Image 1 (tube, rainbow, N blue to C red):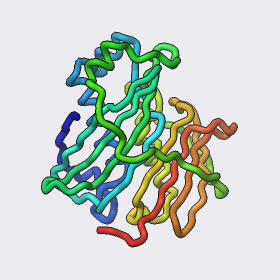
Image 2: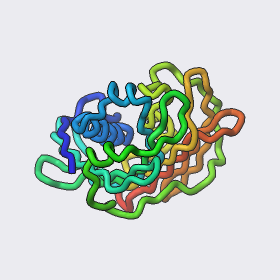
Image 3: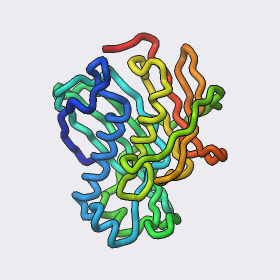
Image 4: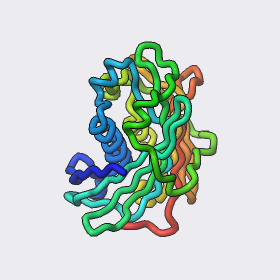
Length: 237
């Protein structure tokens, strides 16, 4: 298990002064990236190898809402590699040891040059010291958006080092169509296709008392990402 510590920053907060869902995904993503660097596979080394990891799906279960200036401990562990797929669990703890979030995630190893799947090298799997298991069975988003909004362009600020829209940026876009983010207890995100600079994103969504489903696709119908959120029975602080 790898442990990473961070402090909640002002830019992580929403209008109610609590941490935003995309910021939670960033904490998880940063832990995975820093873990990879710690075992010898930082972004420069991965570029030399013509490889990159891209997340396929998240399932994040949230506890109480995280507050400004809290010190967080993020635990992460890769628990399975097979073919081109890696699976990684996460846990976010407060300074007092309270579990604030748990997550499961599936990733794919790609060749950067042509975005095709690459088998995880044995030496990479060995460096990560695979072990443990998922905290819970990963669930994927289910639903179909009905209400639509006008398409908007991908900006250069959406793009990460892999040359496409970053996964947490996609989540931020999708979250803008969820009416009550303060009540979210679970977030499921599945990434289907990459979006690049110059592409346009057409959102569709449906909301209910139980949560919301959002899909982001090209105007021609190519699906980029699906996100489903489930509300807690009672809103938390």
